[in-house]
Image (cartoon, rainbow, N blue to C red):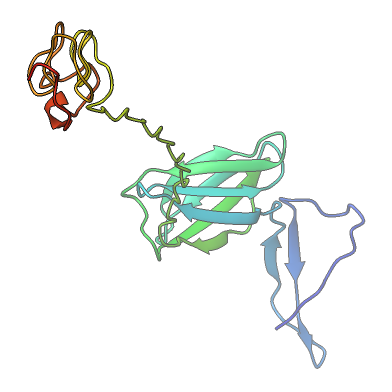
Length: 203
């Protein structure tokens, strides 16, 4: 293999032709003519999206035309390098699949660069954002326990004029007081007055 580097003195530019001759034992070979290529694409990356489409990004000389080819050399997409020196081309789903070879060529002032070959990777999974749930705080309700000896409104263990636990004036501890009943449930009371053991004076 023959390798030679020419100094960067501005003598050659993309599109110029160069003749290469190899001399062995004083005998020159035929001259091989080659063309100086344009600046090629750099930092080329290929990403396969979940929907099957493929993103191809890279860098090059601003204004250069980007040509994307498949493994058979067929052009499948074109684009342009932006003023920032970057390009981004999306290939629709169904054209490429993981494992396929893709060629990226830049053309500047009509002169193509060398083709950069990359391979389509497997699909990149998208990770969802984990939501943080807020723990709800429940308020414990406090119930009031009814008492058979608590005075209800017009009826309870204690009648208005009679007392289920004492002597009712005109009531009966086990029956009905003047305006109350020992067996009537008072408001907010869960225990009935007839559970009190005392006897009225007229029982």
